[in-house]
Length: 285
Image 1 (cartoon, rainbow, N blue to C red):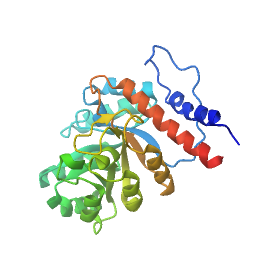
Image 2 (cartoon, rainbow, N blue to C red):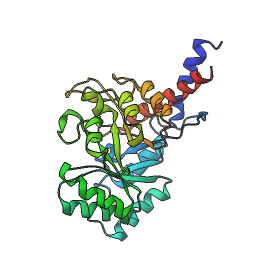
Image 3 (cartoon, one colour):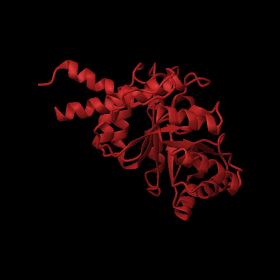
């Protein structure tokens, strides 16, 4: 039987595995490779970098060694030309970063729906993370069929009556084209009084994106905090993602210290990777 000390040592590899460069002025001397068979991978939600330029965003992602991003409009405006879109996307590609989706994007009129689907086509992405008005879902379904681009609807908790939780999303999309699914934000889910792991399980067939974070309260007043310091049962979320064989992205949306988030991002990524490593250790032992 392996000792508790060995278990804690395994957990510690997650922080090292975050591979942060420059937070403490030097590169890590050790960057262990976690043995993992997970189908899902780590990403960043673009909202995390709303105070930064494209180049600064790329630099922070390289420092924290995250190679997937859902890009927001402040880095890629909706009215961009094809040339402008190509220029921004090429910067991320040159840095080894995959723009896997666009969003979160709100759509309030039919004209905005037309604009956003053409924008996504020009960017060459296969998924929009968004929150269209309820009355636009019939039009959205037509666009999905025409463009073959998935829409993952993002829940926003008790702050917004539009899609507050995954249950509300499901009730509006269950009879629509299966390419319309859910981007479950586990922080807003918790703040809305729901169970993230339970909702992931319940709606597993339509979970297309996951925003990971931690919060300090299960109420509207709850705020983002470094992952592992809050109240969300992150190991339960990871276990459920593995149970349903989720194969999308788990993108960190860090909404704290927006003007200087690098330390909080690094800590959160380290904790997430530690949970992944501990889960594998427990499964094997």
